[in-house]
Image (tube, rainbow, N blue to C red):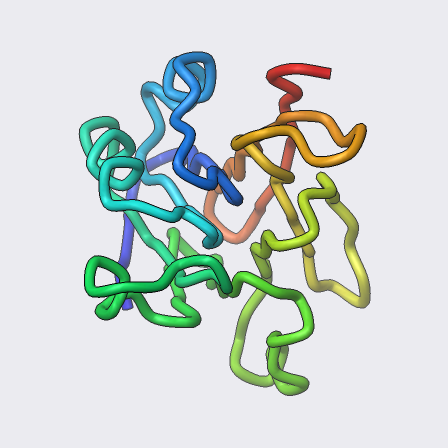
Length: 160
């Protein structure tokens, strides 16, 4: 479990890059205190590019196979100030007891559909896909801003 402490922390969110590192995604994530990648990375070069910006928390997606991905966990947690963040690729893999485990935020990917919704005090965030376009979905990333126990999520469309 990783811990970050700062006055206000900015956590960049990215998912479903599928081998593609868009320069506009890198530019938008610049200056983050940490970056979360919610899976379907598809090669180490993506992580190398993101890791030059900020420390990474990464989970394995259904397309992350091979030796390079063997050590990537299927889920991860990140404590930022007083906020516990759970990261999984597919929302179907979120444990039923996620709130009992203390999570305040769940970050997922997989669907390529950007989403920010709060349900019973649990903030669910899917930054969408920053990789190749799928159907008519936007190309997007997200951001968590954490100040103490307060957390806010925003989405940013890179290409509509």
